Length: 446
Ligand code: TRP
Image (cartoon, rainbow, N blue to C red; front, side, top):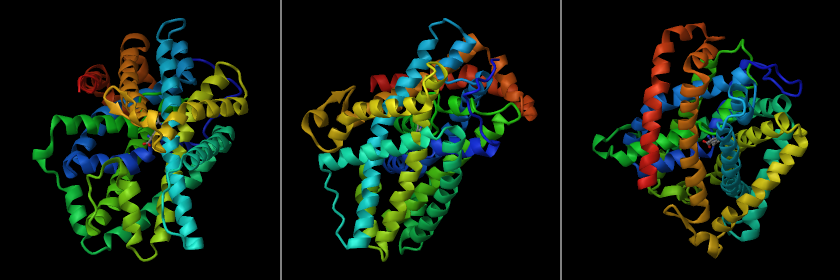
């Protein structure tokens, strides 16, 4: 469609894309949010509905996002401009950028808390100090800033030297570390009760609310709806298979979420924790769990380090989307882009950090029925905006780009896609927009 500008990078290989995109997908969404959602929404029942939603909605949208990125070799704004010059659809691209900045801001605050726990366990191991999370404002803000700086440094290295090289090292490490913790967790006496609870669907627990929670968790977890997969797809070459790449990312992300369940629930059940503890499940129950274990400080360091790694490869993708816009469209240098956006994310994220630190105006703010600034941001950007973005992307593909063009792009590099072409078009035209519409409406009325 358009020639690639010399400043743009490209993945060294297809596996480079898969690692980076899987790194984007796997994050706090899998390891912190998925278990707490499963815990509150009926365990096995939630897991089952989640799997169906991922297959029916996420997989088709994943192909669509990657294909628009590769067809145009652009960031979200540039991609839309390339297909529909001077149209209002451009606003969808700007919405994606805003969403990226919004998620980056509060996500880094939570990631900063993970970093704090990591440091706490290092202190415990080295100095023998007890584990006390102070939650002091300075501490929260410093670790939040530290995490953002880490993200900026990785992204400033550029697509190949930064993202691809780092994820090539970090992702396999992640799987190895998780495997070790799962073994540890499963060996605890009484662990099997947790396994059973997690894998046995209780169909009476499948309510409309559970279905809606499972669907929106799928969007968040797979980094869909704000152009992250579009941007990563823009660094793919026509020799690469979108079907292989998209399917691998969905598989990988889903496996990690399930593994996170096996890592957390057996231990929670064995040691008498509450699976429905909510968003504090990891931060309050697990330190107690580690505390009752021999060598718990080491397990703690390993676990929270793993969460940091997973969160970093996700924030990297959030920053990369916005950076790609400034580099491609505004001709900024990569360095200037990453530091400017990083600073903006810090300012936007400060109220979320104040909320986490318990400072009053921010903890009591209520937006759209969500209490506290951080939860309101998560709802606004992580839920609403992603659903709107995905829905509009489907409509854009149907009405402007053309589903035939999209399907033909997917076919390049994936000849076998011919057999699924009609099914995919049917899903993007009817099933996905309808289901996403239901999520959106239910979110707005509830
Ligand atoms: N998917 C990541 C997680 O599960 C978070 C994330 C990274 C994301 N990039 C995104 C979510 C883009 C939505 C859109 O933690």
